[in-house]
Image (cartoon, rainbow, N blue to C red; front, side, top):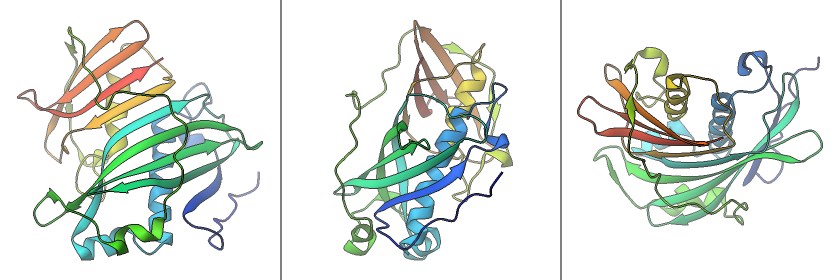
Length: 248
């Protein structure tokens, strides 16, 4: 099989895409890309774009600033299969105050979009830990594009009654990313692993409340109502790190 084609950095980087193949390490036992692998591909795409535009992690860290993910809304028409050729893309949809909207998508070899996402971000002052308004140098390189069409959704994930506690998950080094906290995708993975059976959600919504760090313990509480699974991932006192909704 051919190696992954190189990322083209010669065009309009405000609509950023990279071609790839579905790797064996990204597949579950059915030979399909897993949900965490799909979310990781979106996260990688946003990082690749920021680095290509010169406003990546090292530059932001020097500025003592960071973009922090606050919400995911992901719609999946199908999960691509092992060795399938796919294209992952992202583009900014809005900047307002200290917040931003960014879209993601995944296309198959024919150009058909098979997954798409809307995400919300907050711009944070790392010295104070509080939101702050980004300057033109932080937002203008991204440009702004029309948002992708997404199903309507309420702003917050609503938790049902009857959440049942699941086995606690200690935060060990394998869950930690370069920001020294649990990677955003790992909350989705924790939710999936807390379920009694395997699922392949077609819609995913996540609200991020605060970051778990090394040494914390995540206590999942989960409920299922028909085709909708809701989970609150909490600390020992019941304060949520993240709230996840999976629609089957």
